[in-house]
Image (cartoon, rainbow, N blue to C red; front, side, top):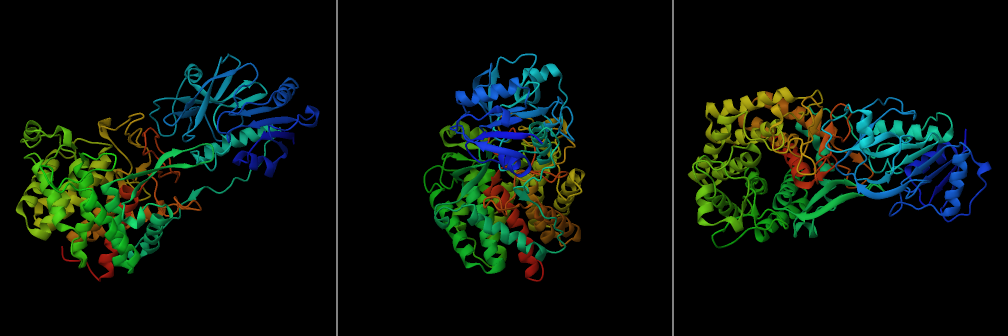
Amino acid sequence: MNRILAIANSESDLLSLLRAHCDVTVIPTSADPVDSRDFDAICVLGGTEDSNLTIPAPLHNLAYEMKEQGKPVFFEFICSIFSIRPKGTINTAFQRMVYREGGLECDGLSDGDLLDGQSNDCINYRPITEKNRPILTYKQHICAHSKIEISEEEHRDGTFALWWYDDNVLVSSIRLCNFHRARFAPRDRWKSVISGIVAFLAGEKVELEFAPPVYTYRETKVKCASDVDEVIKRGIAWIEKADILNDEGRRGAKEGYTNHISARFGEQGKTTNVRADCTNEIGGALMFDALLFGNEKSRARADALFDFTFRYMQIKSGEHKGMLRWSEVGWDDCYQDDVARAIIPPLLCQFYGIDVPHFEEIKETLDYLVKTTAQDGIRVPCTEMYKMDPEYYARITAETAAPPCAHFNSFYHAALLLAYRVCKDEKYLDYATRGLSTLMAHHPDTRRETSETEEYTRLIFPLAVLYSVTGKKEHYDWLCRVTEDLEKFKHASGGYAEWDTGYKAGCSRNHNGECALLADNGDPVADLLYSNNWLPMGFAYAYLATGEEKFYRKWCDIASFMASAQMHSDILHLDGAWARALDMDTRENCGMPHDKGWGPQCIESGWIVGEILMGLELMHIAEKKNGRPEL
């Protein structure tokens, strides 16, 4: 085995592997040069530095000597390498790497395999000559889940991420050394790449013992509601461990963790934005926890969260009275879908002997939404106060104002129906029935936001509430029809894959905007931010509304999936949470990473964690009370 000299100023995942498995000597960049004859290979690891590392002249000269001697040389995230200088550094958050076979032994990889390096920095070296050969090349606008075919010319037109400078000089233009803690994906492909780099330096193949994954999953089969006890408790504990609440809920809840994971040390971005929907979805999960396990701390936090939303996020007077603001950064915007998910949790309290918190404020909010809804029951996706003149009001309340879209409207209809149960205001029932009738008249060709799968999953809960209110066979048939239509997307794991016939969704195949995870229909990708997350609540309520075992079984299946998709990790903000994307075949957080903020690795506090927990808790509370409540 080669004697390796490693130049590095900080520890890293790659350096730890070399120390554990190879004959390696480590020196910092401040060290005096050593005799090149004492070593058979050299690597310079700069990925842990603030910016791309400049090698001091004595050590750069040492590396050059070893190159000229034909010894293996590896540079990682280095400013200048011999005759090539950097022409700037780019961020690769929305690009993907394509593998090309080319002299580095990467077992199991083949041409066109895709790899993701999270929110990385890539040095754009120039000039690149014919002798420089790519192994991993960054390409933009790749619409594929796992593999893509590109030509050698297309490889060379991309930005080289890992490449041969010379036959014995290997260069990583990206921060690669902390591949493990930065959660590079897919994990097995990166293990093959790292094994190839180590074998290149060591002069022989080395059996590496990699650290356990940063997060793991545990397969869980749910046969009854009590089987999710531990899942619920871990999810509730996550709220505190991940520092989601502001001042115990008195200042709302943070939105969550973004998709951007720094490749330097693996830090994940966090957004402190406070939204009304996230705040009350977390509040609902905590309120149900108090009902289920008698947790008074959860009850106090839920009360504080609900109070914050209606005290500070609602307009109290004037022509916009009742409007619930979207968030602290979207102060004058009103998305009825988000508003609905803010008021549904307190409305659900009615079923468990709790007076609906802030019901008068909820009515004012719904009255404002009804006032700005078209006659077909469909509301435009968002209203912004600066537009709200008489002409605009007339346009959005006309017979038809917007294409029917379950993403933006169906939970609004569910909120109207839940409020109707409390106060029997006929306009709530009327507008909800009109809206859901419009959606079902267009089903399955409603206007899609992220996917066809999402449109179906968004309809289950509202249609179940509608049937529980009216008892009409037509509404029961709608519920069964959508449920059966959804089954064609079901995966053996119990989750539902993303699908979009004709790729017509507004966010389908976008790049660096709001973007679906789906590349191609048939990919085994589950979305827990926009699709699967609505199903625990939907199937639970469908069972409670109908009493039919088929809905109970569907709830058990989706609960099993959610229990098996909940992360276990030593990292506090991961443990007990769910990430947006799950490759249901490889069991890894992986999907098309083109969304500007909420990509595969993101954790949304309300939409994901809060909604999943409430759906698990709802069924559990009902079962604990020895039967379903009267709806």
